[in-house]
Structure formats: structure tokens, C-alpha cells
Length: 177
Image 1: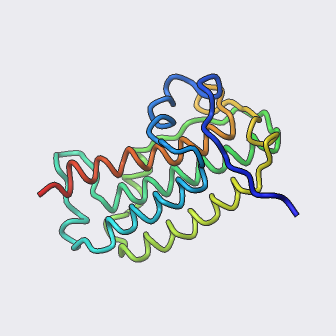
Image 2 (image 1 turned 90 degrees about the vertical axis):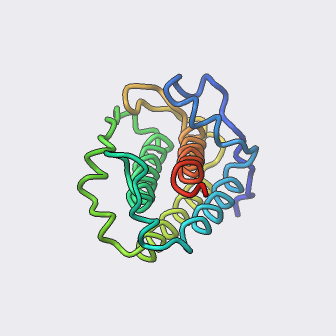
């Protein structure tokens, strides 16, 4: 039986400058604890919102909260896939993805928020179990994603920091009184 270990933050050498902001926003010494707390926070934040609030855009061309939630799901799924590939020592360079195209084609605004939260819940559970399955050797593996070298550990912290970034946007631009 594998002993549960704490997944500590990556060093700056484990990720590119373009990823630093997300990694630094994670602000936790334990990735699994951070992913769990962030899940509780964001689902609590959006569950009680009205449909009008969920569809609100603070400016022309900006996403609704529903679109942002589906964006978080898409990004987490892609980042987790990258982590799995690199943890298994697959050295294939992985391309970036066009987040605005994904948002435009996902039809998030037509979905019920409970469906979005259910998908998010399943994905977050899978992400946590995936990262818990990685030993220290797997966490240190690196690969090229979006043209930059990144470690598996850093990808986990990017997932968390990316979500924290969007939580802040929701609080400051969508839910401020």
C-alpha cells in the first residue's frame, strides 16, 4: 500500500515564466489539500446564484460565470492529461489549446448549473486521485506543453492557481455588491 505524501510546491525551475502567475496563486504547501479546499469554495460560490447572475457578463466579449466554470473544467482536463503523459515519461510535445474557441463552442450558457457542477465534481475527484497516485519520481517528470518545459508537480499547482485566478475574477467582477 502506497503511503500518502504531501505534494509540495514546485521550484521555479519546474515551470516557465508564462506559468509562474498561476503556480504562485496556488498558495498552499499541500496540493491535494488546496485542490479540495478550492473545489469547496468555488462550488459554494456558484451554487446559490440565479440564472441571471450565472449568465451575466461584466463587459462585451467577456465570459459568463457558466462559461468560466466550463473553461475551468476544460483546462483542468487538459492539464491533467498533460500530467499523466509526462508522469508516464511520454516525451511527446503537447500543443496548447485555444481557450476562446473552446468557450465559444462549449454551449455552457445553455447548460444547467447543476450539470456543470456535477461534471466539475467528477473531474476534480479524478484529478485528486490522479495526483495522489503519483510518487515523487512521477511528480518530477517533465515534458513540453505549449512550447515550455513543465514538471508534473507544477501542472498540479497550475490547475489550482488557474482556478484561484478565476475565483478572484468572479468575486471582483461578477459578485461585488
